[in-house]
Image (cartoon, rainbow, N blue to C red; front, side, top):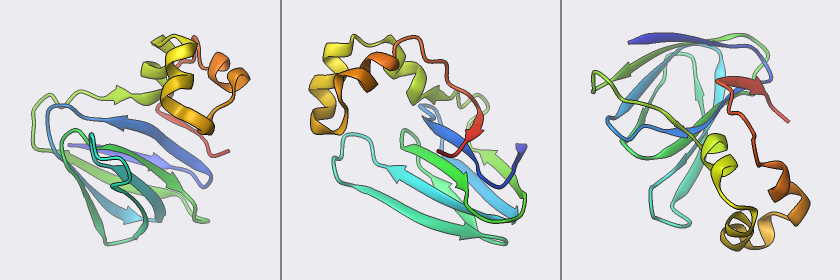
Length: 129
């Protein structure tokens, strides 16, 4: 179990947990959540979770949370695993050759953007852009 605070305009970067389901209770605030099923192109969803609601993130699902509200969000995070690990998307992309990222992203990325990912360090909480 852990506790997380997200200020307005901040987000928890996209990541996934390979060893366990995550349950997040929104103690206060309002968050936009994005979830993507592993290996299921198009099987993604974006929704809002408010105070008193909980979000269950299945093992292996890519997800992020962004505080789109006007007040600080306080979260209680629970995992079913004792050591769930967290794999950051930014960290994974930064290790890949630019050509592979471009081939995988299709029209979503241009060459300059794909090149800028090299050496990018993931952050736990960063400003929403």
